[in-house]
Amino acid sequence: MEPSTQTPPAPAAADPSAGRTQPLPATERDFRTHPSRTASPAFRTALVVGSLVLLIALFFIYRYTTSYESTDDAQVDGHINAISARITGHVAKLNVNDNQYVEAGTILVEIDPADYQVAYDRAKADFESAQASSAAAGVDVPITSVSTSSQVSSTEADVTSDRAGIAAARQQFEAAKSQLAQAEANNVKAQNDLARYKQLVDKQEISQQQYDEAVAAAKAGSAAVDAARATADAAQAQITQAQGKLAQGEANWRSAQTAPQQVQIMRARAASARADALRKKADLDQAALNLQYTKIVAPVAGVVSDRTVEVGQNVSQGQELLKIIPLNDVWITANYKETQLREMKVGQPVTIDVDANGHSYKGKVDSIAGASGARFSLLPPENATGNYVKVVQRIPVKIVLNPGENSDHSLRPGMSVTPKVWIRP
Image (cartoon, rainbow, N blue to C red; front, top):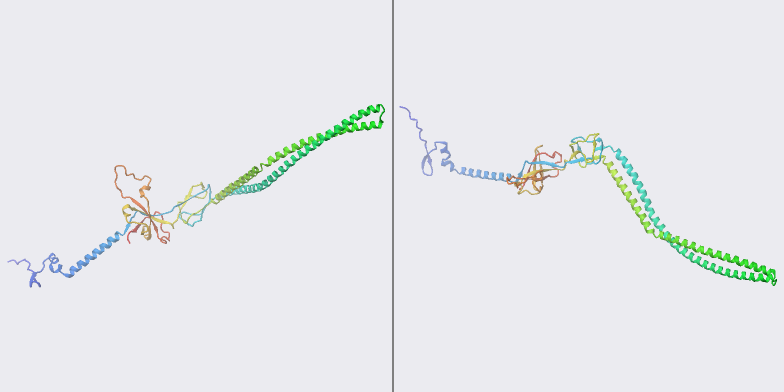
């Protein structure tokens, strides 16, 4: 007879509440659901505490993940100063190499200054000559003013004197005419007396001496008439001469009346000379600037990059020679999705993780761009085409570093970074 294979029944467990025994769990499932385990106070306490811990952990995880906005579409930006030639010339010396750090004011490239030195010397000589001419023209103005004033006064006096001379000459002419009339009258009397004495002397009624005296008196009368006539003619000639002198004096007086115009002309010449001196001064300044431009200096401190100039090269005005990247003035440009900007504000703190060196930097939001990045592209999208598909746009956000964060100048424009903007404290 085969032995029995049935499992013996488990011993009954005592039930303190009922005063009777219950069978013990025969399987693991029965053990987990056994009232003695699930109804244990320690188990229920552990379950409550674990649930609370889990909820608190989930809360802090949620709070942390929603306390910042992050993007990997971000890079380091900075100024790129393009250095170009301001004059045309032959490169005589190159003082920097690629990727060399230079301070502001460092001489980068030297252009042959010989031609510009000659131009400066010529401009300086022209300026000195124009300056001397301007000084001379300035001195001529008061001299001309005084001279013309004196000339006006002198010509006025000459006209007055000439008019008085005409009056005096006319008076002398009238006196000469009176003397001529008197001499003619005396001559007529002397000639008549001579005729009478001639008859008497022929009859020998008077002496020969008396007749001779009458002849002498007649001759004297004729001579007096001639003398008086000559005097009258001379007086008339003096009138004509005085009138001519008056006409000349009046002409001089009228010429002297142009004194203000002459002074104005001299002042205009002086102003023109000063303007010419200023133009020569501008030419001299330009020549000095061109001579100064033969030495191309660094406008800012930074690293030399993209150098294309070489010694012996002929460069033209405006030609780009190299670039300088100022590493002490960099910032972060982060292209955030428009849905990430709801709670982003200027001044919020930022943590920047740099891929190149694995370091983290502190900064803050400086500004938010006025348009999306697509608007600044060469061909911005046009959505009014009938087949519109909504695309989440990205808005550039400028993030600046806190003072002293980039003191080692390890950040370079173009580096990839991951910024985290803490929108909640």
